Image (cartoon, rainbow, N blue to C red; front, side, top):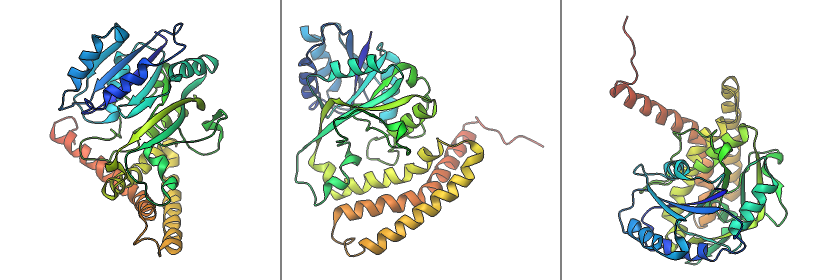
Length: 330
């Protein structure tokens, strides 16, 4: 198998039909050996039945597969599907992503041409179900709406750790093998966005292992953004989660001996950025949603090392309680 499209879903019974409809309209795929894996991330609706109904259709005969992941979180869902998938290229979609008719061909062609590309992403067009706040373009990338031009380029040559979005991301199977099986950031789960940053975690390990990471503009998907996801409560939770995850994703790139220095450097940088932002945007903080989101991001980035330390200590306590860690005896 050359390519597997992986669709991660939670309670996606109402959204999956559109995803499947767009996948049936893929063109120029006659010579490409590809299939689809849907991973059900502990859905409580009729997601499994919807997938089963589509498996009975001739268009999906022997092409559409289903798996179930009970652990809540996008990172767990992706790992489950990757174990089942047979493709050399793993093309990840969410259940609100609508593929361009040339997506499969664009993924395959780019993967063949760039054999040392461990991961690559493309253009993501927002499909909005509500009115956008003023200056929304400043924060659109945090909702995986990405326009990075029509010229391919390598992210790993930019001089900073910028990555493609997780929606529509393609990872080569060999590169996926360097990603830890137990993620520190599980991703979006029921009622929680505190473990956001799972895409950056994955791509940081891929880049650290020496793989190239590319932008492929020929890949294009639509990303449906519901009214709820542009509401203040959701956006504040999103930016808090992204900010709190930053310490972990930043530290991946450093050796153990470098991390104390990096922690101090980032703390000073975050404090300076937050101070300057407050001084220059204080007049907008009460009234402008985008400004409020950016403030939440910067503030929680500053808190991130403390949050990660607290989270790690809680994990250790749980391991001790279960007997996995012993303090030893004198």
